[in-house]
Length: 286
Length: 288
Image (cartoon, rainbow over all chains, first blue to last red; front, side, top):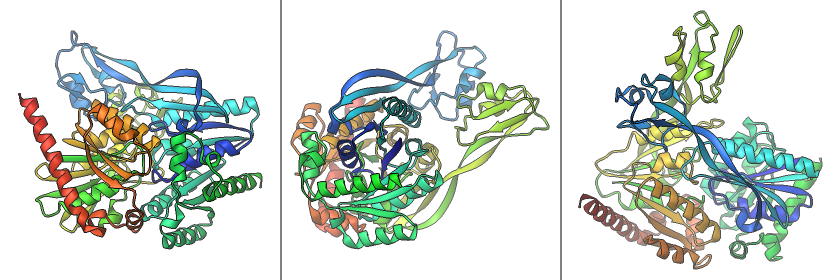
């Protein structure tokens, strides 16, 4: 079983449109949306939720006002400035529990935090594991690890050939969590200076965690000079640039119709994505 | 005025708006641009900034003096992140898991734990065309952007205009960046992905009790659902930028809208004045 994760560094380069198309193209797969704080893959795959679970993670301090003597020790020691006027700000609390350990009046308890929900859903392309991190919650990396774990269990049970994973933007904890141990990272970039800068950083992360990477340039016709820059940079890094996809508003139209673009129309964009998936399958076989 | 520019969905034009605003307002006093998208900071590409200062960001991680340690296990017991493991005659510290809360060193009965700084990123400062510029940069391979964001925000000058460029999403880095702002500008695009993520971003800023308004970028690309939502939620649409291949080309070369199409400068200064009015109105209401 091979796991392909679609990443980009920079947001909005087309990760979800491409991952959604792979969902339609790959024959035997489980799908997973690793962008847990702004998930969009479900908008293309129209899932029917079959299982729903709470994501319990971390703890939040709670002060019992009746016991609190206002000594101020917790406020003084909390490094996250999460206690102000003897009240806990749940958004700032990192759940370290330091305050509850030191409170001389034993007025602080740590309560379990429900930080979101995760789901297993049926789609017409196969099972999708996805999640919804609660607003302003932490531990998105842990939730990503959880949905990946569930996807892997499903893929093993069903004996599927692939796991297709739609990754989050950036290079921090949720990205590291989606990447480690994957078979291949497809990095979707765009020919803008920001796109190039962010590609370089996410490529470094792939190297750091030993995951092989391939690059796909989306909306390539916006700036062909930059396409050349990306291709020569990738060559210098020993990374293959496997596709150039043109800008076309059909990608947005497909999104509005709630289907992967390869199913919405059969134009240049779709052909390129079909060829891209074939290349990925080929390289995973090698 | 602290004005954060956020979006939920990535790639909707936060950086374009934040940098164009900064450039358009530069004749006013005390304008600063703070790039809090520390995982992928991009403002420096558009501002052609001159960096004059550099400060590393460290988080305190435990250092155990094994000659004092009795392997009692207290540190491992109090660590909520499993960043310390105590074996019968050995102690292991995992700095990548440590959040730097300080519980272990404070609670160690032998006072065997001190703290040392572990570098996770840098804060760079400088200027560009009369705009003060500060950016954070998370080191590659590091998982925790929030301490870097906190350091960038320590540089907020409370007198003038501070524009904060926020990372995409709705989780901890976004919250850390927006927290304490007087206003949050949410940049979106009129597509189903844009709308889905805007709704999440609106919930986030509401939770932080920061007033917000919307900039619709690439108007004309998608459908009308965005306007319907904003109307229903009473969210002011403060600026609309059309889907225009010329704007996309300028952006691809790292040129702000205010510079590449100077006729836009007026729109950005008006945008700022409108936000100022909204903030003033709100503070009058709160006083009453």
